[in-house]
Image (tube, rainbow over all chains, first blue to last red; front, side):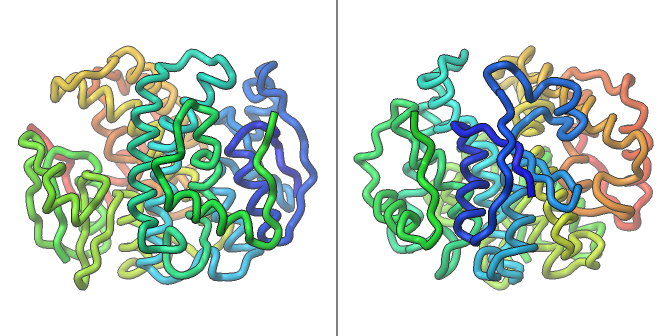
Amino acid sequence: MQLHDFYLSGNCYKVRLFLGLIGQSAELLTVDLPKGAQKCAEFLALNPRGQVPVLVDDGQPLVDSQAILVYLARRYADTHWYPLDAVVQSQIAGWLSLTANEIHNGVARARIGLKFGRPVVLEDAQARGRQTLELVNAHLAEREWLVGEQPTIADVAVYPYLAMANEGGLDLAPYPHLHTWFARIRALPGYVELPHF
Amino acid sequence: MQLHDFYLSGNCYKVRLFLGLIGQSAELLTVDLPKGAQKCAEFLALNPRGQVPVLVDDGQPLVDSQAILVYLARRYADTHWYPLDAVVQSQIAGWLSLTANEIHNGVARARIGLKFGRPVVLEDAQARGRQTLELVNAHLAEREWLVGEQPTIADVAVYPYLAMANEGGLDLAPYPHLHTWFARIRALPGYVELPHF
């Protein structure tokens, strides 16, 4: 497998984390986002959406970080990561949607603005970020994992940007259940450290 | 099944459409969005995200329109709607992510602004909307369906807001492959008409 990757991207980290958790590895090919390499013709032929990560396995490109988790889980992982039960798959899909929209446009966008200096309405992104932190914290008040009794790709999808929310100027102190959940994830065999810079 | 529904919502229509396509029905319970009924305590107990649609089946609430498609497909539909193959499921998940983010914040948001008078940066939503229309049109240039050789829940997820893009002030004329795909969807047995007002 090859992963078209950018080290500091939370979406790329998400895939590296899951590869670690399921004991798989991929060759990392850096896409130079600051130079706009994701918008060049060669990369757009691989992913018309112009986004990292892209995973290539057996010559098949797979795009979108949530979709890559689904692929890796179906293909390589123990079934607890993405069980076949209809209710469980639906609940996981609901967290993948939240990751694609609310997390991307909230905690992740605040980080993009504050840490990378990109043009972002910071107050708006932070307000949306706080809504997500509250929602997930409340959900985890009486649960160990987001869905069911074992970790799933929902945890892997939601974790990265929430764990880096401080980089977007969001205070994680008011959310105790997030901290215990972070600790549970960090204790999993094969855990990969968050990107630092 | 009961569907907590709002007739004009494209996300609710998406579920009604799929119920029709798979020959299932649900009791429709209207949530009065203009009166903010989705934010009242009773509804938040059902869905902490405060959004429609919510499907309740055997007492189990299911939230998020994409996640409801996953549930219905796994539980009630022919397998072509959501095949088990890892690559196919991943490709479908990629379209569900696009629906949750780019479509929600593009074509759907432009419609919300123009048709419902909600505070929206219309030019921004329309610009993002055009990117999606171009992306999907190009993808369909040599394909009949978004993923594989048969309709899947990816088609059901992406269709509603693209088919109503004109209500957000977006011109669909430049996208011929969208029109032939719309026609294919409208010819499916059990097709449900778009909401009108």
